[in-house]
Length: 184
Image (cartoon, rainbow, N blue to C red; front, top):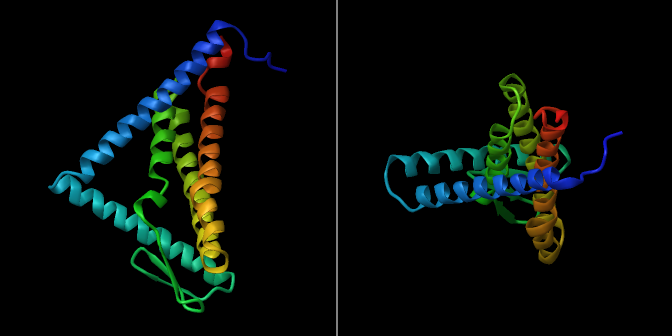
């Protein structure tokens, strides 16, 4: 059994963890702002990536919903429910890019072998994609079948908490098992 966190070193590690996350998120937001508000090849390339990811998520969500008996079609980044004449869009903020950036940045910046990082980062990305796809499928279903208020609370709060909880748990798992912090 591991001893509970105590002492200055543990507080320093916790503070370092928080500062690391904040710095990675701030860098991401700066990059995203710069790319969105400039013209040129970088902006166009980024918008193409966003469009591609939105279409991929919309296609996968529509396919899964159809497997569960819904009648949906994908149009670009939108999922259309033909029975309800409702359409929902998979916008850039629905792609879990910030969560993925925070995860990758954290793992790369913390101690640990590159050999472990080479399998852990892709595994974490796949887990984030799967939870985000699950989130999108459920949000689409809720959008079509439930009230706007129920959709809004799930879109803005519940699924965001679930996604970032997964990211947090992955980072904690890395820190406990692969970073070498417990060996001190």
